[in-house]
Length: 601
Image (cartoon, rainbow, N blue to C red; front, side, top):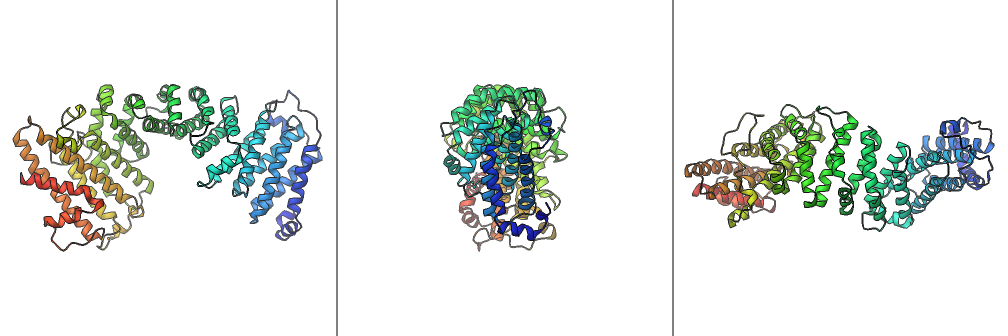
């Protein structure tokens, strides 16, 4: 211990190869240590570690472990090759040791080796032969799992943590090949499945779920071993139900995270649906009636909603009815959370998640109308209320606003605008006069061109959407780094400029809203039951509004340098047409032509 605190002493030991020498000695002698068997009455590792440590071997193991931790980890030794060699020797010693887990001293020594291996791999993940290291860890886990007594988890838990560190530290480009080269994937999957479905400590189940998720994300579902995972999915769902009902949140979170990983693959999602995961997802224990949920319960609730979204995206129509049923059961929660952003944005994370779910469900309008029509009408009101609030919020962000919060609010805007686009007839369908039945239930937008007070309830209208487009255009001019005008002090302090994806998100929302306005206007013009005076009013008001907005888009891109400069005036129709020929503004050309038709007819 004294030597380990002196840099010169450590250097001398390293030069004399003492690190490797004594580590090799441990690896060699650990398989020949004799000891008394463990008493079957011992059921706690606490009792095990309270026994007298009189054996010289165990004393040396602990002393050498402490020495390595201080010299290699605490002092941050920079010799990666040395760390690599010691890591493999320790893994080898652990493998030799696990064959004798029915011995008191060897079990305790194995626990020391396992914890040391975890510490080394946590700080040194770039091993030169990772497939071999993974294979050794799997062999140790297999041997320890076959131990006849209940104390094996004091070895399995740290070794599993070591393996998880190795998998997380692998290069994403080569991770799949490394796992294949280890030749232990099938054994590892079977081992992890057994650990999850057996009676084990909560920490062991959580680690097994995290490790299995890593393997699934790396290997995908094309391998034959995925059948092993599918076989445990019914038990996985039942185990999750038990832990949720018993309020074992740590294990519930790990199991739900594993199921979320499985939903990315059709085989996994189908097996979960067949195992009646729908009942689990609707458990009332996942959320409270209050807006403020405990942090751990909030994480479970987020996982549940993400699972529904993933299941719907993976299984599509096969899960649509279940997703709509879930949305209708939790309808009040969705509406209260999304509605809360009228006054504050403290729940923006949950609101953004719900906006993703509603956007996903919107693709199945026919089923939604049949199964939960009341929810759909409420969603329309929410869209009409929240889109202007979101736009106003984005226009007034300051330097104190968190980047993550701005990102989530923009994502909400994109989801809501895309949802409106899904809920309106396709422009090509309108031109062909071939409307689906789902679009013959009346107009989506109210014929009003006034902007209601912020936060007032009501369906979306032409005035709300054109007002939102104006706000988004102002925001675009504020954050676009290509503008040629001198930025103001407030602009330069805005954190929005630090987010490169914001411009594309705003353009996406602008395009969606423009699409909805064109579609709804064309649908109204084609409707023979609409009063001609209302159509005239629509042509005049919407035409002037959109003309002004499109001129603003033209002006922004001319001045901002995002497009070639035009010599003609802004009022020139050929100037706008030339500008709108650009690929990233192609859809706005359609809007420009539509405006011309509105005003000329």
